[in-house]
Image (cartoon, rainbow, N blue to C red; front, top):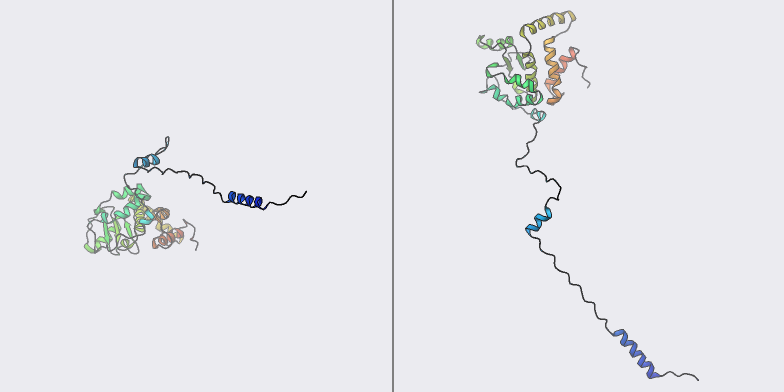
Length: 254
């Protein structure tokens, strides 16, 4: 026996299905997030405090001083305008920046120069030809006697020509150090060395030089790197040429 479709039953079934679809599903309750606690000043101290067992970084109460750089200091000329005609009130005070450079590269040489006072310096205006400075009584006598005829000089006066003051401070330090090497020589012995040096040069056909100057130029050349003196300096070539001619250093490579 065939089963017939019941229209009423089908409608009720469709209505029941629609009711299932349209029935809203109750929403899940949202979780309540508690607000972040405010950070107080005390909390900040706790957060930034040094961990237990760590050594806190030292706090400097004074600004750090920059180390003195003799090369940088030597690139300037702090004695512009000084000359025999425009002599400073104190020569040693005028030389203070230069003496500081010498102290940085050779403390022992600095001690020797510090023993000089203003009366140990003589200013000249080309009284010593083709030189920046000279450290002996003969050069001092020439520089002073030419103008005043006096011989009232210290035995070891240092003559500073006008050309000296035009040098950068590093170059002046180099020249002063050269002359102070002579100051360490015994005058009687050094004079004999110069005399025999001249005689030997005549025999060998050498134009100039002697053991006294050899020592000073060798020392001066050894300080060039510390002073930053290079081939752009007139002082460099004065020393280089002398030592090359004497066979004490290799020829300069261009």
